[in-house]
Image 1: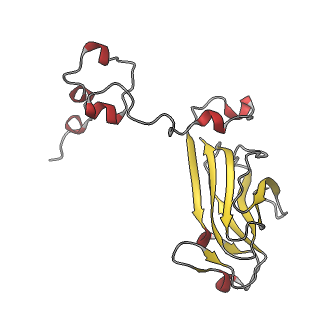
Image 2: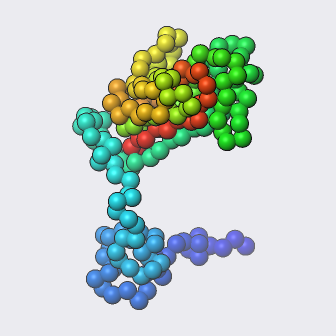
Length: 195
């Protein structure tokens, strides 16, 4: 016989046994760490807290209204990129054990699909590689189109771009990807976004 759902239910009453009345507020959310230690003070360093407000500086009200946003980070290693030219994939994707991809075929560009949640607001984009004169571009393109897409963000490898064009992800109409000029190695990419 399976245990009843009542036995499996998480009981908050058990977590606050022995607390004083001022510590127990029906409308207050307790941090998990605070419940365990019996403290009502936050146990995290406020300087290290991920600050969504700064990520959204310069965004329109339409881009930020209606949803409670949290800062998030999306990363991919260099070995996830593929060569943009046919016939060079095998030579290009000879990756090192550290996740870096080595350009042994002298490929001019490599690409990587980007998969962020619909409605995410991109705040900061950066790509890393061994040649800091190579250029990376984050692009978007209509799903039903075969053109070259439009640039959302761009800089040289190792440099972040925070002036994102069309920063809100719209997966209903667009697809997204990195296009990296690649003369040597690609280490990886990082997108900081709010969602």
